Length: 61
Image 1 (tube, rainbow, N blue to C red):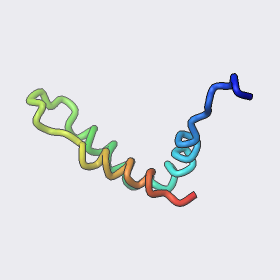
Image 2 (cartoon, rainbow, N blue to C red):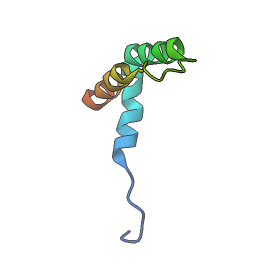
Image 3 (cartoon, helix red, strand yellow):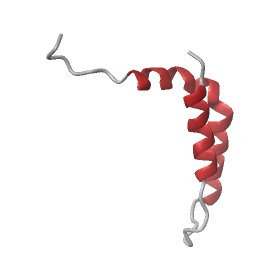
Image 4 (cartoon, rainbow, N blue to C red):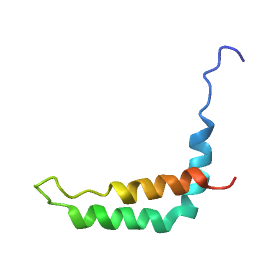
């Protein structure tokens, strides 16, 4: 057992929480689609990205 590679439990929990955060994910995906082709580099979806991962992180297990 001591020679086994540790398993990242956060990934397991994150996968279980993602379905609860569909609204935030859809918002992020819509933003990404909206800004495709922005050559100025000024547009971004940082807020939506953080909203999604914040939801995943706060998910109750």
